[in-house]
Image 1 (tube, rainbow, N blue to C red):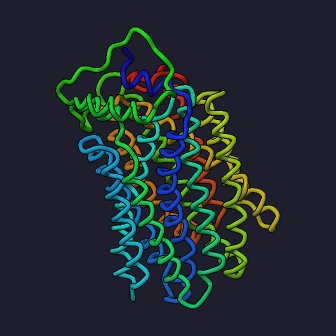
Image 2: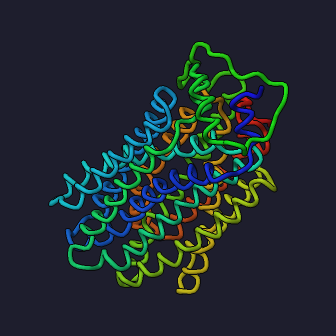
Image 3: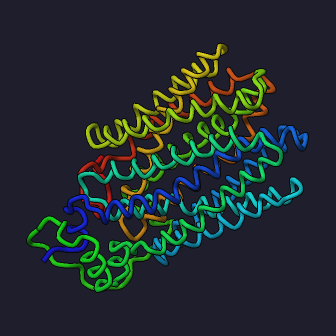
Length: 440
């Protein structure tokens, strides 16, 4: 008799896996669409409401404050109450707050609602990557999580299209918020149709439920693995933040937090402000949005290459190479002056940076055992969100002091630090997920 974890690790990819990936990816894409839309909306509101750069930065940063809190709490709640329930609640919070943002009449109300949107978004992302990784077969687990992360490019591209075609219209930013809220209702329905994670159920001692869901989910797709007994019911494992720093996990948690912090700082500092930076360089609103759309499209091949390499090179090598590529691209983009340079180096930055994001989301849940997996991924994301709070405030200040060159040099340094720290996280390529600590 094989255990739940062994059957999931040894399974062939099936339509059931596809449903998990698509259902989770839909919510992921909606998250990206919301985060991406705010960069276009800020550029429009800066003109319509005559916003100071600092005020515009706070509209962005308050969302990331919510995301930092949401990521930390979401992981803890998912380890306590289950993955699926947290999915549903986070999407509901996100959808209602996004829809209400379309009706605001001033900065104060928008800032308050952006905080609530951030709570929902921050909780959802680390839980989604944990959820997919717990269903994925071991031999392609990293690839599937990178594909999940690739839905971010779909959502960000959708935001660029809305930014290009809708936001420049009269009251276009209000319609953009409304469009961001409508699909959330559908995503909520999809998420409730997904099963709870059998690994989580087994870790909580709910073995019968875990066995039943595994049987329905895999059907005949599981490869036989002899010699292992199913997990016996027992006392639920205790989950908490302190467990992330016990024994061999301490070094890996510290390294993971450094990577998350640096990648968030560089990514959000750059991509949230690219439309506004282009406007400041003399391009009109529509043209700057068009260039941003082209740059955004380069995310898709970045994810595709990372999804392939992560099961060929492994996690650490793929993550580090893409982070080094991000550092070099950031330096070049900061020095770009001609349109072809902006587009070329912007696309390279988009390619490498989003490929790195895919690898990072694949690595994060693998570091931890089931009892604290969502907590570990959530707190890493929460630490990263601290950097994403600071980055949108840093960028306009640094632009005023010394221009784009200084800004992107700082981002390049952050990417380089993350590339170095990635080597201390470990590598779980092809290793069963329930091995608590990845090989060094």
